[in-house]
Image (tube, helix red, strand yellow):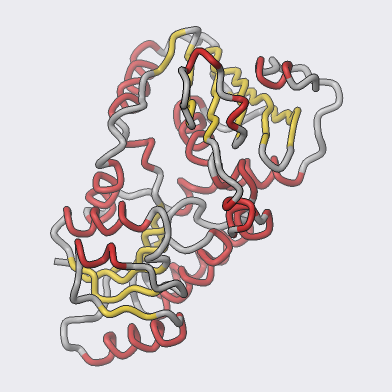
Length: 317
């Protein structure tokens, strides 16, 4: 049994991590969040210590490490807002713990270099959650692509529209400096998946970058990708049906890749692999972090050479 601690207990994603810790037969020792609406913990680890101040949380973990009473943590799970990931990863390494961090591992690529140096210095590992890599449909597609290996260039169309209410823009998620914007906050898993399947991009074009929308074109070694991300409910096609708040589709050579199901236990699968030493580390996370940083900072493409996503064309770009 491994001991865990967790940052960001009150956040949206924390329950998936609590479930993964419990389902893998491990124990949560302590958690922290500045907000105290954390009753969810009673369903998993009611005896875990809880703090609203990260300084006291840090001190508690250090005390557990020194006490040699069986409470020293082996892993720190990081579910806090994106801009705090780097600091909380460093906290974990200082108390001799590995890290399992939600996406994105960090906001800026250069922070990865320092974290790799700290891994060496402290003798610990930094792992991240790239759950689409363990999704059965994605794994099956990767196996098919490897088997065929016929040199064919694939045509990919990615559309991800996930409606958000007004609260979103008043939270850290709506703050570019804290979340990295929608490319980082909601797109990074899909970019990681595409590069895992087809390789890192040779060409990156960006056609639209708004507060609630982003879209462009990627030329990967084995695929051309037209992609579109949006938080706007009016962007959901009428064909999706009335009342739909989310629309997610990926087509490969005109055929839709069905992966809407199978998400329930993906975090648990990643935890199992990580605890066995086969998780996703800094080098795995680097390509997608570099890409979303580029998309966040590059100029819009004035003379597109790639294929424009139909949703972008409708915007009149």
